[in-house]
Length: 162
Image (tube, rainbow, N blue to C red):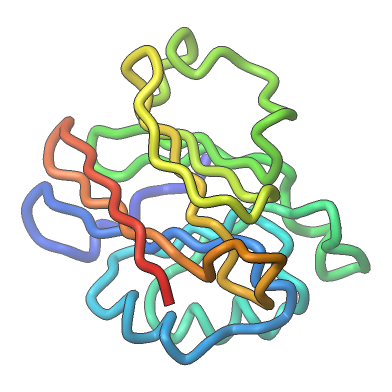
């Protein structure tokens, strides 16, 4: 399990959510993620340089996507659990591969990617967030990221389209 970096004082955390960069990190991401305490990358990163550049903004936790290959990618887990304040977040690339019941496992948030389709949805008390694709445009789908605000047990996600 990844550890909460505890950068922001108090119990409020701002987390940048990104996925499916496929080797392209748009300059708009740097504006969207100003002031974030942590960045979660939900896979299909493309190159290790993407993670290095994101680390210039905040600590990064990433999971491997289906197109992430090679030695650098093999070091990245397929799923990850992290805690931000009192909130537990389960991360994976493809939501279809979820191997646990998020409510039963005690997760308050599930972050995924893969579909390139942004999603913010509450199910059985769990907030599911897919920030969409921040990389090359696919079909007519939006190019987007998301921000997650956590204050105590409350979680609020917002989508940011470029």
